[in-house]
Length: 267
Image (cartoon, rainbow, N blue to C red):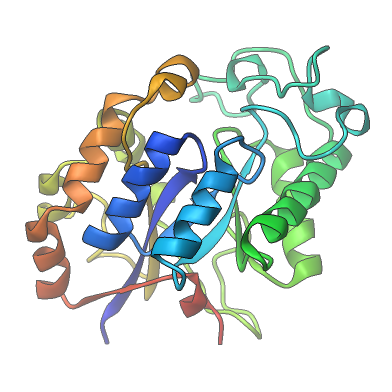
């Protein structure tokens, strides 16, 4: 039985230039799923681009608590926003992970606020795409409150979620986030993926105990907004080049790996 692989382009909607790169990664590369940051200014551009160019593409929710303005009224989520109603950046958050070098601040977002904003971004997602997402995931920060909010929303909406237990249930097959078991995964993302990372199976796809596995990348072009608002810059261009490399597609095919989207997790 062949393994199934979901390759996600995170941050769809981050900026217009980045959106164009994601589109290329889907049309010319091995990306199977686009993960939309529905609260961002460029999300409308992303949704319109997808509707016009790739209307059958699987688009899921990339829930974002650290960039731009929330979809909720800022007054309703006070633990997540500053005095201007903008999300606190990830560096302002307090981490629960001793290995997390990014979140070094004191912000502790309340579970109730996280859940409210997750639902608000889901409603914006529907406004932009015409339907609710079939998968829910997060961007940049993960705390117990965030995980609890995601799990509760996913359970209520009966959709797949990146924080749910990787076990079979009545309606879904287990899907494994390879980042959880690949020690060097974050190093690869922070430098940008190279074809050799696939050829040497650095992600552990072939040895995974799961039939369905998930990989996340950030394939896209840069513009002034990205240069000013993210620490992840050049690796996005490298991801794009790698995911569009014909040799990577050939390696996937030669190893009997089936490229799928999140519809594959549903029975």
